[in-house]
Image (cartoon, rainbow, N blue to C red; front, side, top):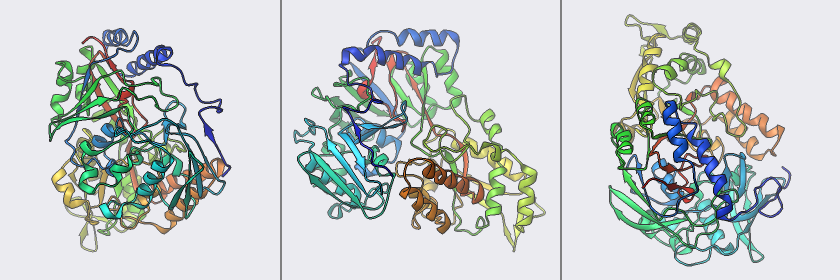
Length: 556
């Protein structure tokens, strides 16, 4: 791995830092382009183009509806949308993954570099940044944060960040630099520093106990918004920091937020979300169901699909604890026993793209496996026959007196996950497999997650640390799968230099996970579909979070 330094001053590929006024036209064009991705009639498109014209508007309150209430705001627990979508505006990170450029750019670290072995990383800390409690976000504060992320906080019973594999230590060198040392190579470490789960908090926040670090009212970050008030299980109000002036290098808005406040409300009833936008009760809502997309767009409002470049595809992650899926031939049969196009045509909308790998199409290192994921029910039957699973009198296969009956669990965070598995249930029945569909049942999920005998977890996962942290750990409750051959590939990929060698290992990982070993039955690329009022102007991170620092409203 060659040493690479990214600087806000000398990298020609990075946009120059501009003033807010000079960037307004750029922001306007970006929002107009985003609006055009929404589905709807010609009249709706014209309405959204009109709404997207003009310069950013200063002031106002944006009301944002999330899916479920949040009761734990601790940084490393922010692996769920309802947490990360809010903390994205409260916590800054060392680096930022720019979805347009497809690479990391400076943020709190004005420069960053790695040694050829990917065991040492150096960050130059941007001057003049402060936390909301007034303390400086300097090199010493960064060191304390990195140690908390990499080693955990024993006194507060906070575990290490799973994406910081091999973290050993951090030390301040000079006045404004921090050097991180890893015990083993990890080429994914820099990318991990862009995650909301690597958000930086003040030293005083790190000294709080677990309850204190879980309370948003006590968290001090350096982000463009700060906590103002909270009504438990109802809403959280964030107010802008007027002095904010350290956005990511490529952000259109380099100053404080246009909005005065963001009110985060909770709207668990999926059927009410489009109506809340149409009635003007909310300006932005996450989690539109496909049937509501056309209705909302047709009313002159916006449907905004935010692509999850930082996530795996939606998948049925295989768990082999019950023994029924221990044979890779059985897993491969189930993979090609899914008619993905039928799912797209029946359950999804144009906002969704069918998966062609465990990685999103736009993720770095993506390998297109779509040709081998075609629906092949007859071949699936042959694989199951060869594996010794014979069709019984009721049409369900049996082996050694055990029926090929499997169960899927998932959260209700995805509006399409349950109906998708209802269709898969029918498709698998045709090849002699019975699926118990418990997708979207959060009560069942609570007991199913730690149970290795539940065969599938319908999920999508952040991949800031690569695919290894998802599939590698033996104690991983998501998959309950740890394969020595795969783990060797993960280790080699972490140690590889960027370029052809690493790309080949990423391709090998995807080939194994999706086809050869079939631990990931992939469905569609992760996307979070937002509904927005016609006067709402907002963009999204590569992790699908709204960027409220650059958002604004028109028309009241």
